[in-house]
Image (cartoon, rainbow, N blue to C red):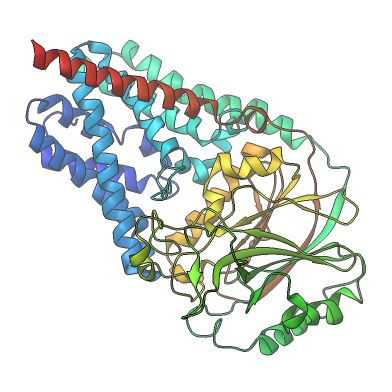
Length: 527
């Protein structure tokens, strides 16, 4: 089928198959999406420049077709994500290609798996992180197939995809097309799906939660471009009171508001000098003393004289005062101290200039989607918000952070037993971006088997069960308020207990393979 097509058409075909897989109901195409690219590599393995050009074109087109919507938030951010991510993918592909050539063994094709998975994991750890197109994310649109992510995480999906593509490529390469040759790849596709449906889904469906907490999600639907940072805090909070009227009562345990809902920038520790915090305390919390509010805010930390400065610290005018600016998750309740978490997985080129210590003079090019110039600050450790009775541990996941499986699982290791995702997806307008972002949250629910409370400024807000099923999804770009009794989970999945083992092992193998490649290269030069 593919063997007679020209290389350029194959490159386009691979990109289209990869891209279309991100749109349900075409997810199954991911199982053949790499085959055209593997055929190109096999055909022109000696023509390095041509292979670089065609593979980069494939990866660039894939990135463009799936994530073009970043443009609405930031043209620079879109360019960085699409162009640079394609370059990184191309480099990784060529590293595998060169190693395969130097080894000159039939099994060399299988080395693509640890090298690619090692790249996907490494891509989560540095300042240029952009893991939207991690292969395993594609099953967010068919979450019933991957209930076994509770053991493997998203990397298990990436492994599954590459194994099947390589098996099918080898079958096509033989040109015999016998039914026996297709038996192994078909079994490899079907078996995990059957296990997911017949065993894991049924088992999880039968579980019952004993502890239930009334949770109210508010979707204020404030236009982030034309209203959010222009309306006064008084107006926004007054609108909040109108929206929750007749919805909030003494049985409500949690009130959840979206990312950067409190737009009144303030210094942490000086909450009483703001309008917003005393207003929430006096207008809501005093009447509902058992209520906990989780919201997004914009906050500052002022560095004390002599205190070591972070790489993102900014100077306050011409003074000797330095500060960090944060996209913050904030927990408020009447009888406990305020709790803060600073968003730490930041969008490169949009919320943070990559490697700020190195590119400090260029940091003004990083435009925070909260309306402030410059790179945002972060924190090293996850912060878990505990309820006043210590029964509930909340993972305050902010927007883009919900894309990271091991990162979110770390909240659960630190004592969280429910996940609150607060986000503002209105920057992307009504494009596939906000729907992809929502779908990825389903994978976090499966990996941790925790219920997710998702509050989005402009939608889609919802509840997500530990099976990854969405409940009470709100319309996009409409005011909405939804409530549910959510359950907590105190049993850790294999993935939470042991982490992303597939990625850890793949990364080690990838490093060893890279070293082997350099040794072989050196031996060839000496010879």
